[in-house]
Image (cartoon, rainbow, N blue to C red; front, side, top):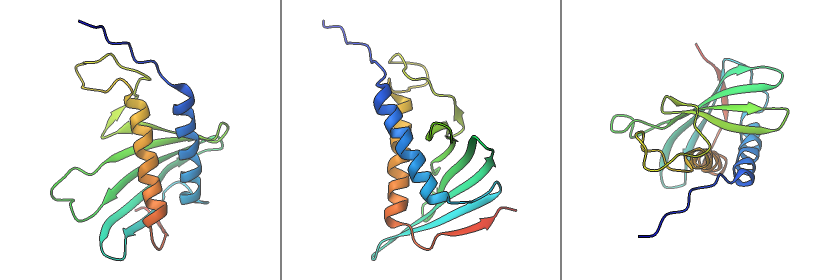
Length: 149
């Protein structure tokens, strides 16, 4: 029986993903302030995919905290993904800190584990954020900013 090699965190890849996510979020958020939300209706010429919401929860000189979620046609059937992302302005990186109300992900996990996290769960969550934001940049229409109640 062969022994599986332990997963080693690829810091360069994780940092590159977090840097790219910072750039994506910076493009989408612009000069929004705490309490404002950017709504991006997502559609192609044939279908509507829902709306991507980016809500600025807190903005400080060195950090911004953003809630990212999507609403749409499947709201009654599935629990839509929700994330809280911290943007660090000094290093120009954005990192997922909360996904589906689970917080603080480790750089690597032993597998299997009680919470069923993948060994590279943190990297996968940040990649998912990147794909989600790229989808918003590619298919988002009519960016509008609203104040939250």
